Length: 365
Image 1 (cartoon, rainbow, N blue to C red):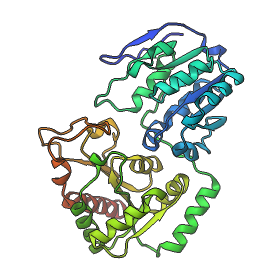
Image 2: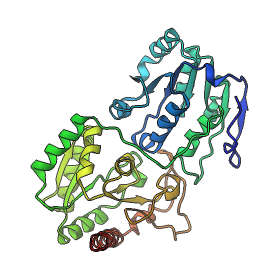
Image 3: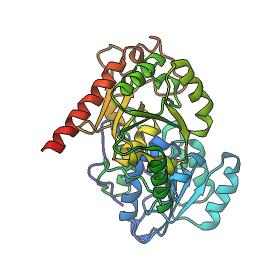
């Protein structure tokens, strides 16, 4: 086992306590990714893992949030749903199934402990938050402006694999998902109608846009002849409907679908808008609509490396405090989130107009 030559990054640490022959690996368990955005960004990891281990039996242990999205992944053999209350039960199952290798792409102490108690002989992951003593190959994850999926690719690089295509995201849909979305389109869209799908939510309230921003944007896109639909999670419906009442915006439907169904529906819309979130990263993986992401905490290149005639990231990066890297939920902004209040609807509307102009030029040419 020899680490890939392009593994090392500034301030990156790699400690190999125990080497192993990757050719001998027959059963692999991947712990994580547990967040939707992280999964969409890191989807190339599973493709590259399968390419490196074409004959291995691969199991992915995930939280309920990403379980549905992994059901149709062609690169793994099984998906196990993980409940924190069943940690010891899962560890016993891992032990009984006798895995050769655990790749801990989920950054939690619990994940490392489960693999350790599961007696997986080779455990590769990040040593942050005291996990190092439970690992046989440990890396140190730096939270910087580096494109985040590169960190997960480092898990493969650390054991001698040179993965490619870190930016080539994938979303895995079944024929039922595709048919569901087609029925949705037939029932909801008029011929030639362009739809803008948006989700104003983020697990971190600091990343949310302002009410006035959404209100002005929705009024503006209605004047442009675009239909708006808010696609949200089931637990967000009540708050979403309350928001629309507060914004006093008519003709905007609130809808909730499963994660795979939502991804399939995004193939039928023209624009997707929202704060940096799993919804936005799913839209990028679908690669059909124009995507406009609203940033404030992290620089776009850390999670949204695409800026072209199809996608763009908006951020008030002229402020001295931006980006602030206050990415933890408990972090508090000392400047009253001025970055989001200064991000006006005009910038979003101008981005849409530019996309419209580019699309017309492509048709004419």
